[in-house]
Image (tube, rainbow, N blue to C red; front, top):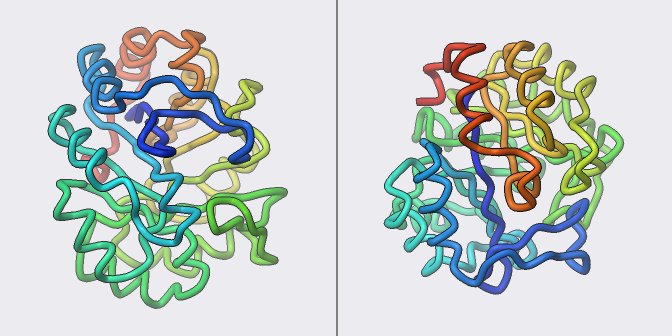
Length: 247
């Protein structure tokens, strides 16, 4: 299982939100590039970045900072937040991003996501953010009446790199992932699943790895030292072999 340390950007700074609430932010660093270097020095071989400003604005916003993260990290970077057009996609790939996460646009135009994944095989990630099982969009500010699993299955035949599944209720709350929802999603689609939200102990990491989850994103638990990244990486590498579709 691959571990993706998370870097969430708001106003150019590295922050964490609780349950996606922009009014409940904790600032961890004014230098996100330095944060990326720190995770790589501890053994990370990929980084997950979210442009929270972009998610809210409907277009990528933190381009300068993201370029610096890509350059400083020296490992593949996965980016989500506000990527909704061909021009947005061209921009983030020009910044050096390896994988682009498409969320809101997937709900609005699943056929565009399918076509985009065909043009960029294994570089597009479907971002499915759910509240009570239903897809949330616009930086989690809106909740649809489309079930998360239904959205994923609509585009599961496209050559996606992965599906990132985030349960909003657990995100940033340090209370553990929604294992039942993750299992349901993993059973529903053939695409590699990356778990996100609530991973806050080595036991959680081990449980995900033993369940065969290809990847997981860890945020607040790393910043608050609830999980030691080096230990987590060693654990996953001893339990499972990585899913080569995520390479």
